Amino acid sequence: KAGVTQTPRYLIKTRGQQVTLSCSPISGHRSVSWYQQTPGQGLQFLFEYFSETQRNKGNFPGRFSGRQFSNSRSEMNVSTLELGDSALYLCASSLSAGSYEQYFGPGTRLTVT
Amino acid sequence: AQSVTQLGSHVSVSEGALVLLRCNYSSSVPPYLFWYVQYPNQGLQLLLKYTTGATLVKGINGFEAEFKKSETSFHLTKPSAHMSDAAEYFCAVTKPLTGANSKLTFGKGITLSVRP
Image 1 (cartoon, rainbow over the protein chains, first blue to last red):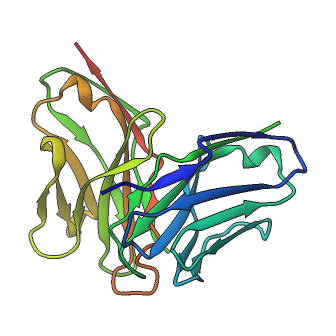
Image 2: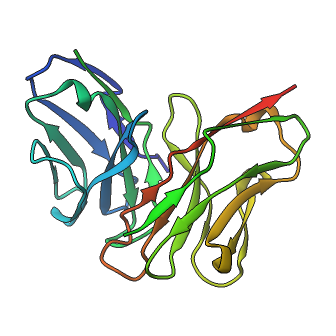
Image 3: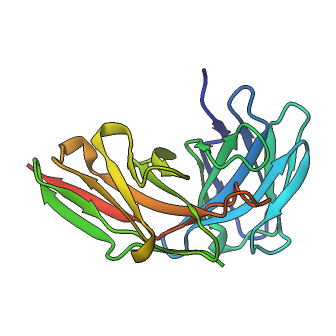
């Protein structure tokens, strides 16, 4: 069974631009969560989607948004990029809403210049 | 609110030596606890988890951890370190049986180095 895939793996953007990251969960998994990983703040929860609905949200500004499609694939968007948004963005999939066992993808490394 | 404390950012051991990575948690309800490992340029891999039942849990690659409620700890151990164990290790906690099961709170992580 294929794992969680994230595209692109690496991305360089300029301050002020916006970016969209994509995540395809493991086949049969319907819940997708997003995390931001930085050296300073560590791993922080962004949001969780299930059945195309956001179930939980972390403490991030409104510039960070996401969505989930009917095939469970998910995208996250960051608008008006700031230097501090440079991070590894990790997607995790799980079987259903509230499922605590999560499987992580390799991440998208975003660099904002 | 939940929190996880991983003391120290770096641990170095010799190959064949005991590995001990410490994790203490704070939670208002009995938690579910996890250890993840991250190799360079990769995502997180689940090593082991504690939900209910036996407090000593065994995971992959010879790792195990013991849930000690009285000490609010969930330390990770491996009897004999291997060079391939060099990686970053994260302890995480979540609130079970709530709508936020999937919201993991992570510690800062510990980098494990293994000397030949």
